[in-house]
Length: 179
Image (cartoon, rainbow, N blue to C red; front, side, top):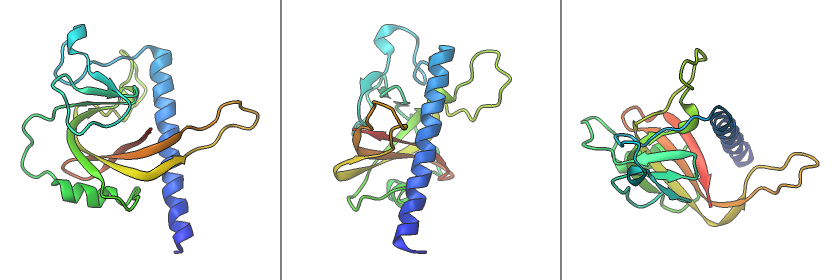
């Protein structure tokens, strides 16, 4: 396999993840699905803080990253989870910028994966899942994706690619970009 083939595979997997996130977020918006952060009540004061990037640490009320992913404090982790270095190494299979990634253990919820009440459609729900969020940072912003032919929208440049892995199994859960 050439470097070009390897890069194409990473880009293809990345585009599939983006398409899945866009589809699930769109479905959630259309269906009016909202989800409070793990362990929080529905009062306004307990709402996750809005953020455009993965923080270095999670505030008690959690953080909502661009309405894509909600991160809340993980509580006391069980034995048998990957450590930070193992998570970074496992995540490097999904993207690597050559810069040491940051890692954050969190309870992760992806609101777009939560089915509407009464739905009998199968969903791969990611809610309050103990996971490592491994964030790779580019040296310079990178344009990802492409616009539909005839579209007036332009893809936004991004600097961070975050990979979310189950803390025990290392299973890839979701990936997302932030500015």
